[in-house]
Image 1: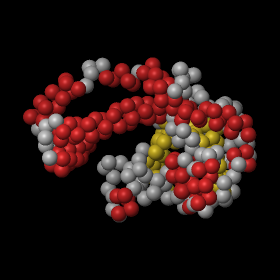
Image 2 (image 1 turned 90 degrees about the vertical axis):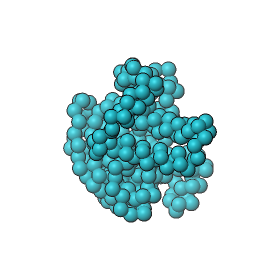
Image 3 (image 1 turned 135 degrees about the vertical axis):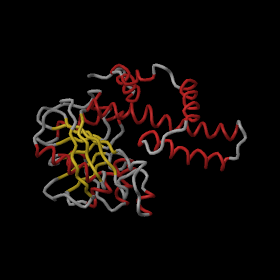
Image 4 (image 1 turned 120 degrees about the vertical axis):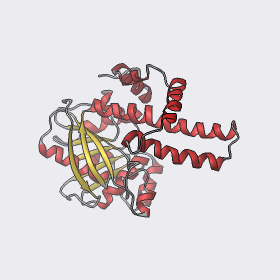
Length: 301
């Protein structure tokens, strides 16, 4: 796969797709399995839902959907979605990949296992990864449904970052794009990158950094209340409002920070952030954190 990035604008809702295209969801009773299945159920695709756990099977049936054995679900599938936890993706692929039809697409929802080289390989199928960006903090929401959809995949438009290994044909890329925009709909745009680039985005950029900072903000809020004695509602109001303006100023340049604010920001960076923090973008650090996430000794790439 090359290191070039291309972008395709697709703006699509979930109610699209042809019944001539068959999609199988493995792990349809899980958290992400339910999310992608809910949108596929609205589509025109022929869809089969597979789930190993009895509780998950019962959940699927409770939603009015039929549960299909994995072997039967994947035998004629054009796209097989592995909606299972990262730590078992490699094991699941060992039984799924050999049974897939030639020319089909296997789609995972997170790049870790693909980057680590854990997926069972076949030369005659295509490997895709697609991860949702979630609705942007800067999204202009216009309806109650959009405001309520913080995760995406229901009402609030979001973008998606995806990767296809090798050099797939235009038809394969279009098939992958169509299914990806369906499962994460409504989708504004699909950004095509390499598997490694997607792994840098998730976990390094958004989990190692952004999610960590989000949790750090909560810890700071709790400390402001418990240690400094500030009333909880006042502290929360100040933090939530200033978090919004901080992101707007820093990421969009909407309003410059004041000189005094810059002094406080510099003090914060000196007190909290390590000088060598950017090492987390080095290849060996990426390999290290993904191996920890997947609970393996080392990535295979």
